Length: 233
Image (cartoon, rainbow, N blue to C red; front, top):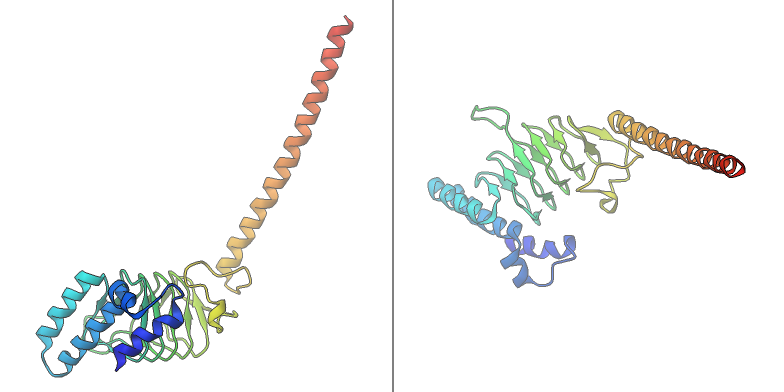
């Protein structure tokens, strides 16, 4: 069953996981998915009010809002979970992972496909927003706090506001940073400008430190000469 696969997938993605009982009772992301699998079944058999009522209760318990109409594949994991929102027409493939604060949101009030589609093995970092009926291809990585409003091709990493594709080693999950900003190796011009400013400030600090030391030495030497002159008198 899918919810059993959801539970087992935690062991591969969270080194803190110790046993199944702990995962079921202490992992809000897993609890939210257990609720979702049930409410999605109710939604499909047209018990829509009951599905929404239970999903609302699940949001109150877990801090995670998953619309029962969303379509979510196998081995899906939400790490930490608080503040995650997954809209009604969202589609998520297999082996995907979201961190806390992620929103898969819509940009229209019309009753159409208005939420994102995530293909297989997509990872979305903490606080990121993916908005509109766009598609993130297989193995896409979205950096923390990014805002993505355009479709992304397979095997790409996207960061920033608005999200931009960067050259990165992050196609390998071991090089993907779900919490922090991207490294200095990025091709993002905004990040490069910030890194340049930080480097310049560091150089200025070093120069000021050198000037301060030289002034201190000169002042010490001047004070010593003055003391000698007073003693000679």
